[in-house]
View 1: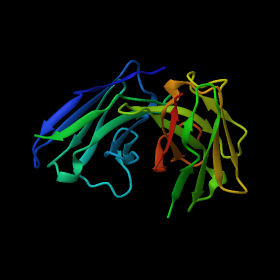
View 2 (view 1 turned 135 degrees about the horizontal axis):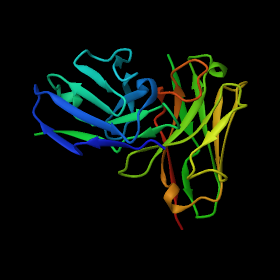
View 3 (view 1 turned 45 degrees about the vertical axis):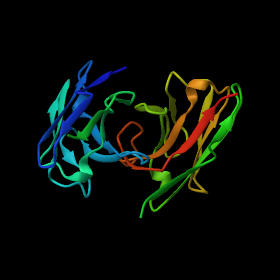
Length: 107
Length: 122
């Protein structure tokens, strides 16, 4: 099983700042089969990024993904008030697993 | 518009059984694998099970193997999760999710339901 470790656990930022979230895999994720999701309290996860760097339909271009093999990053440029949420990475190169999440909170 | 809607959650005693349903619409249901993902209270996401579009292929997380059974009725556009021998650690919100890639069993998820809460407690 591929274990995904997300860091930091919590990120305290102000609107307008840039958020950089990390997702590290215990072994190489084949074909960069990595996705990112956003989840707000009481809501279902929402797909943001797939294939490590492809934005899902309707996702603003302030969200971007990068990385390969074992190190992946989600960057949110110019945080908007609606971006404060928990973010999860998920790999699908093998039996699917999720990271533990990073909470982006208002500073 | 794609929609997936879970039902069937509730309170059940340890050792008991429960069946979740997920009604889907807005896409060709039989063409896509479907997945269950759960989230324990205050915790992260855990993949539970997946079923192929035809229903012939299924996979389970080790934590539920032998206790949970995933199935689907393509004539009703409905996904199911039969949960037996429930334990306290199965307490979670269970999400039904549509696999994003046509015909692919293991992939990411582009549409999620609102979730069904299952509480296992005496």
